[in-house]
Length: 258
Image (cartoon, rainbow, N blue to C red):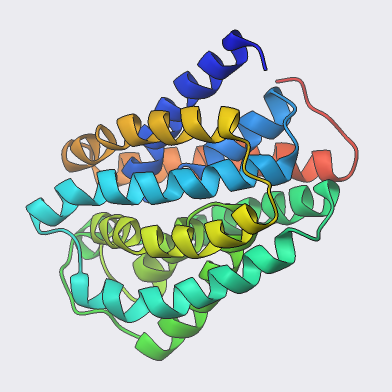
C-alpha cells in the first residue's frame, strides 16, 4: 500500500471520528463508504477496520459525555448486553456475504434511518427534556437488531440506537448520542472477534483508521456540547442520505462520481 493512501485513510479517519462521536454513530457510516467507494478497499476489510475504530471512538468519545453527566449509564448497561449478542450474530453473517449485498444492506439502512429521523421530528422543548426512558421492552428488542446491524456493517449501532432512544424511548438527542457512545465499545469488541478470526483485518488499513478515529473522537463531544440539537440532527440526516444513496446504487452496479 502506498504511503499516500495510508495518510488519506488516517486524515479521513480523524474526520470520521469527529463526526462519529458528535453524532453517536461510531464513525463507520463515514469510514466504510470512504474506504470502499473512494479508495476501493474490499468492503469486508473496510468493515473490519471500522469495527476496531468503533471501540476506539467509544472509549475516547464517551469520556467527556460521562464527565458532563449526559450519559444514561443505567440505560446503557441495560441495553449493551443484548446489543453485543446481536453484534456477534451480525458479524458471523457478514463474513459470508458478497460485497454487493453488503452495500445494498448498508445503503438501505442509511436511507431508512434518514426517513425515520425526518418522520420522528419533535419540538425543541420536548427534545431537551430529561424524562426517564420509555418502552424498555421495545428498546431491548430493537437494540438486539441494532447490534446485529452493527456487527454486520461495522457502524457501531448508533444508526439504530440513536433514533431508537430519541424517538421510541423519548430521551433527548444529546442524551441518546452520549448513551450510544457508551454502548458501542462492547458492541464493536464483540463483532471484531469474528472479523479477526476470518483474517479480514488489514493492519495497514486498521491502524491509521483506529488512530485517526481516536483523535477525532476527542473533538466530537466538545462540539456536541456547543451545537444546538437541531444542527446535530441536520448533519445526521444530510450525511446518511448522501452515503445511503451512493452505497445502495453501488450494490446494484451503479457508481456515482460525486
